[in-house]
Figure: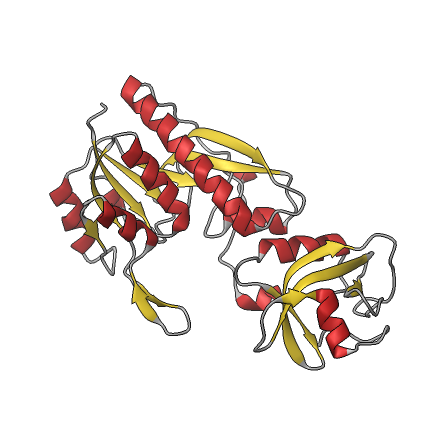
Length: 310
């Protein structure tokens, strides 16, 4: 089965490591599906997606259908006639008729230990919720949202101060390991199928910018985890003197306590929480570059007792 025809479907950086592994291990990737190119950055310049860039580097045909249910994607897939489809962070739900094209099925690499964290943002939610362990799951795709039978799982511990961005990079590498191991099982002709326990299923919905506003009535631990989970996007934030302030890093401030939402130190950006206190260590004021929390409060000459937040 080493020469099986594979179509890869993926869009962002998370998918790049998995596609790279397919290529580096000599797999026969006959086409890459990616979401359409979009404008990026302040100047809104249209750039190719990360997987498209990699595919073009190796001369692999790229397909970017705007819709999945109008028959266009299905026609493209049938023309390629793959034996297997590998999916990683493609960003679209695949219709049943497309899932039925490859005789060996469609395998998805998902950034959580299913059935926990089905959905769009499993990596971020594992950090936001303060989980100690996460991983990736290789699974057969079904019509539901990440509901298919599981093939294998690979686990890893989450660092105490690790951001979702840092975890993304590690799980992308782990995802590459998982697809390599999965394809070896296909080579051997013995691929397991373990149904998911629906009673244990949880969802990881898409992130929204407004969920990043810090509520200092929550515990220092919850705020620490939220800041980590929303870095590098959409980034946690609060308000000082009526202006928004992005918060990229925050640590639990041991030994400090005080009223929630109150500045507790004039040299360090330490804010009282509902339980404990948190130090905002990397922030970005409106229209300025990122700086340390201490530099920010000293520059603003904020006094102890200043209210932080709305």
